[in-house]
Amino acid sequence: MIEVAVKDLVKGFEIGNNILDGLSFSVNTGERVGILGPNGCGKTTLFRLLVGELRPDEGEIAIAPGRRIGLISQIPVYPEGTTVEDVLREAQRRLFTLQKRLDELTERMEREDSPALLQEYDRLSDEFRRLGGYEMDADRSRVANGLDLPPAMREQLFDTLSGGEKTRVNLARLILEDTDILLLDEPTNHLDLHATEWLEDYLLHFRGTVLAISHDRWFLDKAVQRCVEISSGRAEFYAGNYSFYVQERQRRFEEKLKQYEKDQAKIEQLQRAAEQLHLWAFMGNDKLHKRAFSMEKRIEKLQTSEKPKEDKKLSVKFKQREFAGDEVLVVEDVSKSFGARQLFAGLSMTVTGGERIALIGDNGTGKSTLVKLILGEEKPDSGYLQRGPAIRTAYLPQTVSFSDDRRSAYDTMLYDGRCQPQEARDRLAAFGFRGEDVFTPVGALSGGERSRLRLCMLMGREINFLILDEPTNHLDIASREWMEDALSDYDQTLLFVSHDRWLIEKFATRIWHLADGQITDFRGGYREFCAWRERQTVFQQNERKEQKKKAERPVRPQNTEKQSARLEREIGKLEAKLADLEREAEACATDYQKLMELEEQKNALNVELLGLYEQWEELNT
Image (cartoon, rainbow, N blue to C red; front, side, top):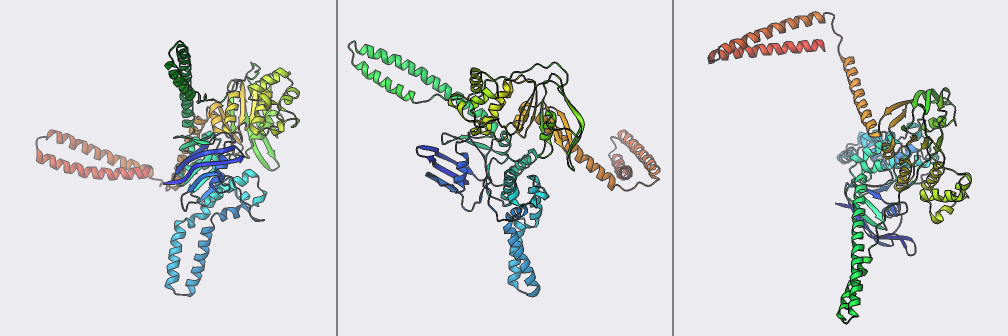
């Protein structure tokens, strides 16, 4: 059944410039679809059209009758004094209304003996049970805990939350409302790894339909079944997750390029032939002109196809300072607290040259604080951190700022980057700043462009220890790939804080997982770390089960050993008798009557032996 249908959709905000220009696609019930495309291609506009916030200039949008649709980028305005718990309970308003009516009926039935009241109570009670009314408190806590909304936050006023916290609360509200069609606009932007993994697991078991806009490539791989790319206002379809999309998109590009090159060769061939025919026609054969004109019409048709364009890759290289020592960084018994809250204690690690370390963990565990300790911006409460004497560190913060936002990117390179005009131009071009782009004030740059400019400035310094704090946060996929291209040839020591699992898997050779004030230091990639963590979880579960079994076992009597020895002697005697009967049966192989008697004796001994085995096992378990 088609759940969402979009046909010939047109939407523009400027005359003659349509952001959506004939967009058509459909989504079936239960499908999980990723909506892809660069920033500004119309993804969010599409979602606003689907929920009715905007009206299309042309085209049709059809939502299946009776289906409830929810968009998480919309943060409703609630009355003053509304708490987070009130917002979550509002999502279950239907259940609370049913519960209130059931309570009213219960009170009336205590006073009245009415079949009609009993019938209504039975009907509403069945509906309450069907909708999960008896589990609504547990469901509310489950969703809140999964999206990192602790009890203290649930008591806060909604208006006092940050934008990211409001987004998480709104997502929890939509999930609790049991929305039929979820429109997720960058759902993982404000989620840490734990909450993102919880959301992925929820979507895998969600029975409704999901349309997701996301720059989190790992999330797209796990959460979507097919992709719709918005390109030039129209839809391109890919029957798989993000990894399939990347491979198929490249295959299609190569196919188009091959066809274009084939067309160009044909054009060149036809042009030579047409010129030759015109020349022969002037020598007295006018009919050849018609053939030449026919060829030129074919040339015009072939020339309408444009050469397919591939996204430009960065051609940059950091100035790397060779490191010959053994230790880049030594962390010894480091502890750090803020007031009564201790972030971590007893951290001890050693970093050597060329390692690529991903620092991961939930929000608030102290990852950025640890980075500040390494940079010397904070002091530890105890222990010490020491960088090698030949270490030259460069740092890309999560929020990039410049000394003067009014300066252009070019002037910033001259003044802050301390480079010559031609060098500034060359380095800016290598990082995608070309033409008039170099004169854009840095205050007007997007987050991805600011990060690119900062990396461009760092590139000119000799470094051998690069530290990045959430380098891909809030960047679109294209900007993330720019960042990865810039880092791909850097082979010195790298330490980066990130929730971007795609980036972690691509670059990390070592994982620092910060949780409960301690670091798990795992040497390997992210997939290996996840597999190791799953094994540890299974081991811990088995250990807890074993401990529970031991705790439930009855106290063994003092004479257990004597009873066990007695049973073992009796078992030995019975086994010896069975062996004698086996030998006797072999000797009487032709005596059918005797074999029947021996078989009955063996069966009786086996029953007795099984009982002794059970007693022995119970005694020794």
